[in-house]
Length: 350
Image (cartoon, rainbow, N blue to C red):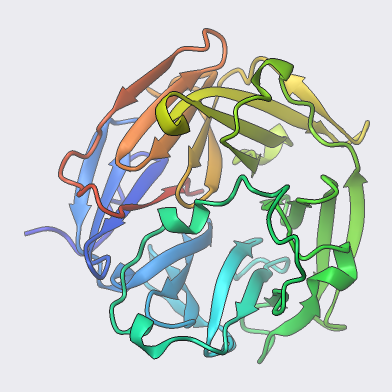
């Protein structure tokens, strides 16, 4: 009988794969062990992992906007203030575990008042569909959005309701682009201006302070600009001593531009306030997931992980790209996972 507990003895990072009509099946794939663990964890059924910090996961119901924090080690749960009944959670970040004084939760919420009731009857989680138009940032939304999204933020256990702030009023554009947590702060690389911003929510005043970190767009390889499909991520180093913020740019090629082809990695220099191209990341592995646009890093020192490498998931497949040799390998680590809509999320626990 499969366990209802996470595989505590497995080495990190984990690739958590949830599948089934209600996401009732979970597989934890340990990359360093090249081994998977099949589980049926009740708390993860009907839930999407939106964000995490240490062993705390921020879970969202696939049937509603209900969200809460859950500790996969202790099984503790922390409820959050209610979100709008009809809304789309476009993005979510958790800055630190709840016991940390700097713990904050930041949502990008779009309220959807006129929902077709017939569409709600058959719930089918399709993560890939949410990202089909991610690369159309230059031609999307040429007209004004009639219902632009709003930033919701709170401190778990401190605020009884979410603070709300209009995105347009603080950054001049509601399309936030890509974002991450770095040193317990929220960082955003905007879509329109390509500026790197640091967002600092204040739970007492209910306002967000924005600091411009850089106004220079990362320089891309000129030889790959004709590739019209790409994905990009900003990822913090999982090792606090590394003090690095990465920009990862993934290019696709081949038939229908469906084949991962090349990666470019840059580091942000906080002294010079600029992105710097790097051809080596040393004893570090980067992990990104196309479907959920999540990422993390891990030291390869003393592990079976490959240094100078980017581990990348697309569908059921795991790719490994070497930054030095520019070679790429492909594997199917968990063949029992169905082809339709597997939901994947990288977890590196401290």
